[in-house]
Length: 138
Image (cartoon, rainbow, N blue to C red; front, side, top):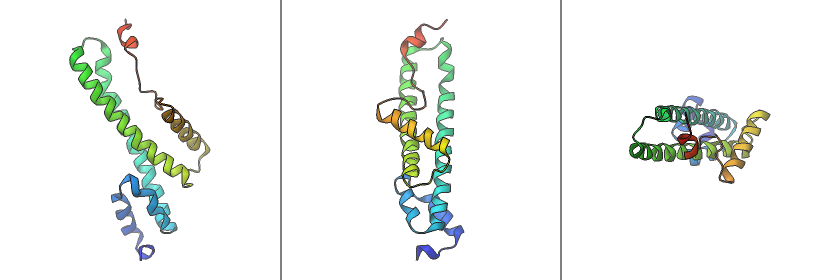
């Protein structure tokens, strides 16, 4: 029955599917596969954009004249937020890669590198900072 739905309905359904079930929906037929792929790319881009916005929110704290107690609380919040967004983004990227939805070799290389960094406890987007970097600023 799912393979007979109009494309417009499929688009609306796919947009509501959670990340954890998204790729499974691509198994229905070719139309669903294409819609899931499009939605996965959209979510990937949204995660990347949101991570960029969260990073930008932390920029004022890099200037030096800040209340360190407040900074630690805010930094912990941003770090957890970015970590969560990164995990969600990497989940989508990995599922896309494993299901043949990534055809661009450069995207494939980016995903493989990010997954490798993340698996080894690294910071795939180079978002981590060290206290020494902050305390030795001029």
